[in-house]
Length: 389
Image (cartoon, rainbow, N blue to C red; front, side, top):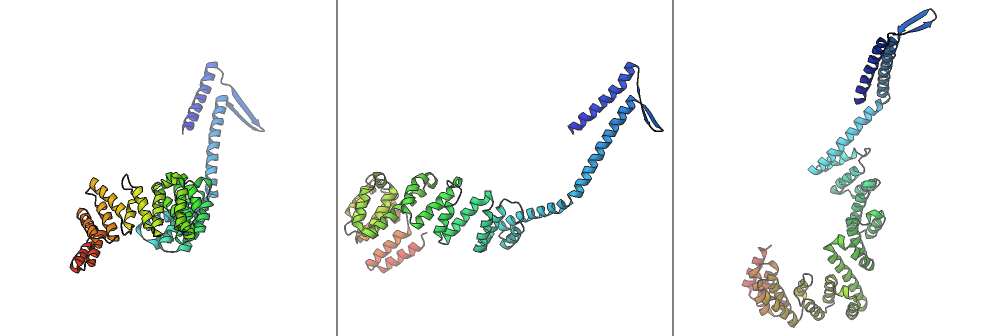
């Protein structure tokens, strides 16, 4: 619009100059055009005005011609534009139907978007619908199509990897993750899924090497996976060489690993599984001298010893420092029960239930009553435990 105004003003100034100039000079001048018997005579001003008008008319005619030609040439785009809008409506309706729980309608809607340019999102959404309809093969096919789009490739591969893990295809899942582009290797979900795949396949050494680099991503799950690694390696050693070799292997580990809570927890668990409860107790007491450890403390309930004096003494010291902590009394009660000391077990468990009623301790108290052949008390405790979540 701006250029049109400038052009109009320029023409007006030019016309004004052509009209004023002859008046100042005193000679308007003329132009004679002779073509056979046809003679045309006009002033210079008339000629200029005629040329300007002709140029404007020529521009208007050219503009109209281009518009008409564009309409005639692009008539097929009318149908293409209509089809594109139809696919877009189907795309949005598919999401609405999915949110509404109308899965069949969502499936039909997304089926009408296959020729649209949705950067693979339509295939990802259609795959989600197929998952809800339990059409796993169709879901895989849709995800494979989605992976052909650059921006949808990572999302599609992640879903396919989860599907492989669900179906026990661990090798396929790991291969799929390792085939991703290098820039996707540091994606949090890729790291988490790769950790799970390596653990399932028993690649403990590789997982142990990679885990420290993945710690910022795994966060709290780091301890869980570190335990899995240690448990896997310790179980392999114990099964092949026995408990004695397991203890020797522990002593050869670097101090950093021997001080790691995850490795300590896995080591104690393996000792318990090997029936070495005395060794397990020694480690639990030694490593908790400064106070209960959130990973090791729960394992104390699994101790089965005829004389768990070291554990009992440690718990009694904690109780003196905090006699309102129900978990201390609960753990003491379990250790005493496993040792056959029903008197101490009942006393500790009653205190635990009084501070914080829980189903586990009530059931153990009921078992103690059964040992004494007190069926009425046992039945009452069983009933009471059913009312506790």
